[in-house]
Image (cartoon, rainbow, N blue to C red; front, side, top):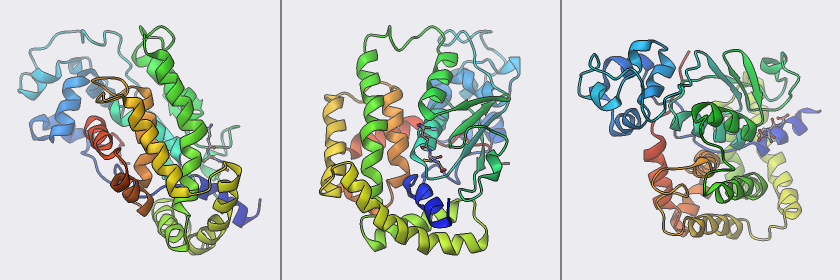
Length: 322
Ligand SMILES: N[C@@H](CCC(=O)N[C@@H](CS)C(=O)NCC(=O)O)C(=O)O
């Protein structure tokens, strides 16, 4: 593949400022200073106290989040009654492109469940970081050395390990959840590229993000920023045709309103708590939220309130900086 083609592959994977990027408390602070954690992290600890142990797989950490927060970590039940079987991986590594929507689906899941993960940013031009794998796309997740590929498969596998008692097929809203998970992969992701590369300035804004956060050498960065933006501007017009989009923004606003309608007045599609479809929609939209297209979407549709609830529910990134 020539360089321009490679850049377009990258460009399809795109997004904007990832709100989770570059923030997050260190795992040590999570452990040592729970009382100092912000509201998001505190509520996550209350919901997923067992996940704290995901960063520190020590038996003593199988604690009630409420008790931990009130400083009574030593007075704890041995077993978390909500999630009796614990999923406590020691080493989770995500091979990704920072702006790839599929990678961002996985990140939203890991962040929500507070599973600590390291990130390896893959160079989209030579992909040397994933040479070891037969699979040539991202995301790839390794969980204690086990390779998982394809965002939906990764999420399903992790979900099953976190909730071995739940099967998507058997939960009452399983069909609804699956329907919207399919909608994310088959519709929502295709609306993004035509929007974020809609004009020359939007294409440059998008590539500015990609090249700042991606894994590029200095020369690659210069070529990617302008070459990639120009290439994707044209490619996005083709994608627009392929997916029968006539007006990019109308398609984006339509998708946002379709999602709001699907909520039927509920806080989340999952009801009082997000389900996998909430996490997938949020994950895909998070990288574009602060680009012009994402700002327009929030301004012109009713998705903003759900998005803010999701931001609060997902909380801070559980990425482990190495
Ligand atoms: N169905 C896959 C799609 C993954 C995918 O298409 N990833 C893109 C990046 S967004 C990719 O790696 N493309 C190949 C390339 O960059 O060469 C998933 O859900 O993970």
